[in-house]
Length: 295
Image (cartoon, rainbow, N blue to C red):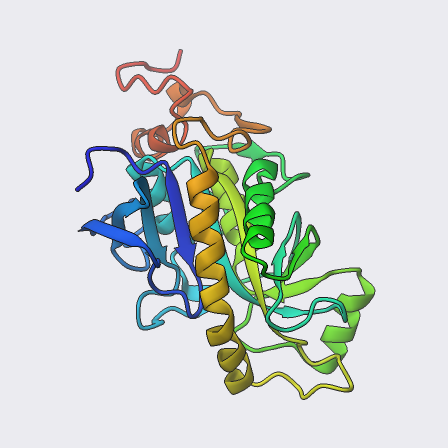
């Protein structure tokens, strides 16, 4: 394993189950208080930069969107020392100008999920985080710049609508989401963004448009075969963009946005011991003296 801590993480979505250019030093299987992550963390270096990679759905795609162990995944990145997290994800386009095979770097989310846990808060631990600006502007800008340098069509900004899945939208839903002013639709990233913010990790999304969902009258309705075919064509572009963005990020600088508007409102001293132990990994800036007792 590299002697340098991987301050940069990459979580790969559908079709992106390994990281091009990653010189693998180790594969680390972690256990967390929230269960096992989706897969082992592949730790190594990309052009000399320490990186930790994780396949969101597991290599072989074992986890549907609702069953991805999001908390374990983010907690695992935190254990490894990751401060900046790039996400690569397949999405559907809700805008004419966002054509299939284009990349999008969203700066907003609408969360329509309903069957998953998207917080580390629990009874005995009150956490509030600001989500007005849910992604790291520095990381997002690096992705946009890298796409431009690689001559890959990219859209800077936009709203990512996160649905539960695994079903794609009905035609009525797709039209409704367009009326809300959303730009792309996916099934994973809002959950990750919330957990990353709570964990103090900077987060940015590289969304790979694979289809027009089912709203577009002049294009075929989305099918799994269509999405996968376009996804395979997008992955190579995404790999090149991620590799370039990683090389441009100063690894020794702390995350610029992971701690933004992040508050643990309950005193660690008043928490149950097991809760205090779990959160001590996430909230290193708070005092978690195990000997401290509430008054």
